[in-house]
Structure formats: structure tokens, C-alpha cells
Image (cartoon, rainbow, N blue to C red):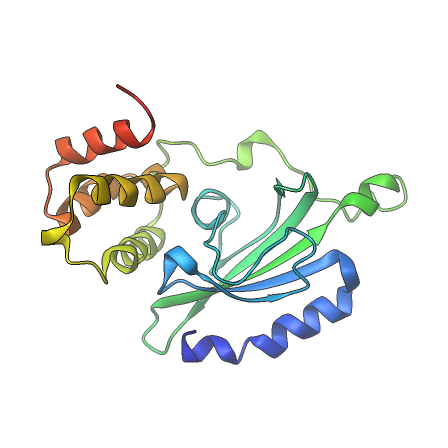
Length: 211
């Protein structure tokens, strides 16, 4: 775990304890993207566990029209267990301004939807407009974060010795996480792996199961 993130553990605990069993708080170490979850308070909401990777960072946080001042609040997703979850995520930076982590608050909306009329003011509005379009151009700060994320994914690998299947698995991981939703990501990944854009597109097609 990145040293800065340890100080956020009490924050995660107090938020979870304040809002009760429907509230889960997780801390992500984005310097190790493939196993970014380093702490979970009350993982019963989504089933989050340490050692897992991020899911919503790019699609619903960085590319959200609500993303401002390093955070996106009150986006809704359906967890693997079928629960509707309201989530808010904030980035964590080091002294140099580099993104090293993320704090995520997940609130189970099951009970809230059951008593919708009483808590209608609490529930978030969610429209199609809030979903990122594939061709939307992110702002400079988001592009910098994505570049750093790609660097962190590739950093500990000897790219010169990677075999075809290794590169395809890397491309598949980044595709699943939404990296290629960001304009310019193909160029960045190609440069980092020392491959051509044509090769990256070919690997991407294969990772997606296309012939």
C-alpha cells in the first residue's frame, strides 16, 4: 500500500460506521492498478475484497460530466450481486500532484428504493446524459491521469520480452477497465509497449473476440 493511503484508513472506517451497514468504503492504490483495492470497510455492499482491481474509475468517474475537483459524486451502478449502488469517488494525490489513489463510498440503495416515496429527495437523478460518449474528448487533467494509469499498468514489465499472448492479456485488461474509451489512449499504449497502432488495434480485436 502506498504510504499516503494508510492515513485514509480511519477516514474509510468512520464513514462506514457513520452510515451503517448499507455503506461500504474502499481505498484504491492506483500505483498498482491490477490489484488496486488495498482496504475495504464493510465489503458486504458490493463484495469488494483487497487485491481486486478498480471497475468504475474511467467510465463513471474520470469521463463523467460531473467530474470536478478530483471527484465524482452520486453515480449509480449495479453490483455483481444485483444491488443498485450509489457511489462517490475522490482521487488522492501525492505532494507532487500525482494521482496515487482513490477513496470510494458505495451506498446500497435497496432499502431506499423500497421506501422511495419517503426518501425521494435523497435518491440521485440518473440520465443517459451522464454516461460518457466514446468520442468525448477528456480534459487535460483527465488525460494526464490516464497516461499515469497506463504507465503504472505497464511499469513493472519488461516490454521487450513480452510475448504476443502477454500483450493481448494486457490489452484485454485495459479494455475491460475502459482505458480505450479515452481518445489518444491507443497511441500512448502503443508507444509504451514499443508496438505500432495497427498491432494494438489487432490485439484489441483479438481480446474482444473478433476475427
